[in-house]
Image (cartoon, rainbow, N blue to C red; front, side, top):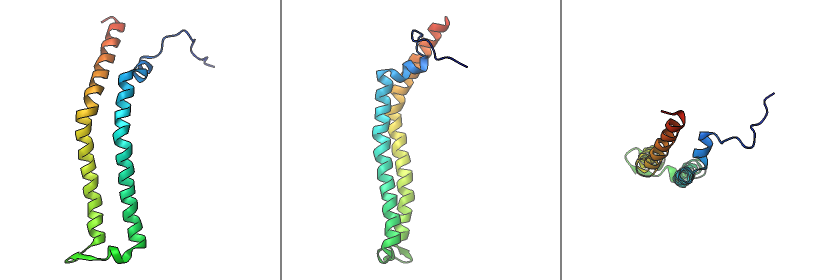
Length: 117
């Protein structure tokens, strides 16, 4: 049976990264975007489902030709999905990727020094 590591052993490199202030800030930034946007989208989807179930008269309103409110809102579900994906890509390029790259480069440099390269 394996025994737990000794208390005086050095933490793993991955643990050092997870405990760093930069990584904690990066995770906070990520969660600050993803959680509210996900909650908003789920509420928007739930609204569509509830309207479909409990407001058929509203969903049946003709907007033009054969397009009714249900079809328009359903298509907006797809449009909002693509818009959120584009928004996230832009957010990640600006706010997540630069600090993640810096953390990765710092970890690689530390690992190279420890390996004696």
